[in-house]
Image (cartoon, rainbow, N blue to C red):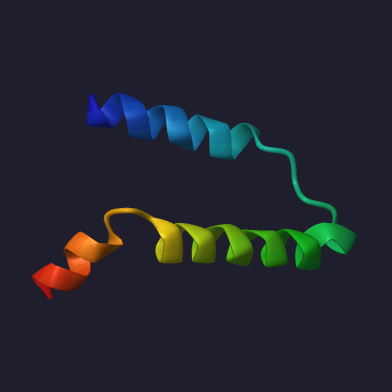
Length: 52
């Protein structure tokens, strides 16, 4: 199952369209916002804090 999932993901990467140069900064900023939201707002964060 893991092999199928990684193969599918790698296929998506191979087929992905390139981001135009003038959109790299905007995409990078969006990625940072999404990653911070996930890291800071995920409901399981409290479990991790208690474990460590």
